[in-house]
Length: 147
Image (cartoon, rainbow, N blue to C red; front, side, top):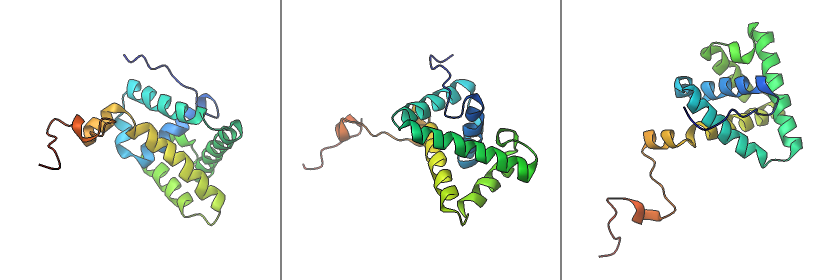
């Protein structure tokens, strides 16, 4: 088991389920995350949100509640309980909304979901991402650019 503890994201405990639903909708591979991997993603999202002003965290919490309400109105279920296809269609419809505020809110929570998934070490390894602060010299097969 991981040493990453559960993080309560903006909006309280239910927001974690909402964030997970967003993550699963925008990164379909996210549905295969184990509980430990999800806690790691939550911790990444939580750390990123800690640096934002309280007003931004409140806006994100409110937007997640709006997503939940929209899911109930359209599908009769909360966002976290929607089948992946329904959640994806809901978010896609919001990405085309005439209301800029809805599009921006979606872009914001989607960005945090991407961050939570792709900033995990396991995701970087799976993608073959080998960037390092040591630059090219950190690569095993690194060769000098100039001979």
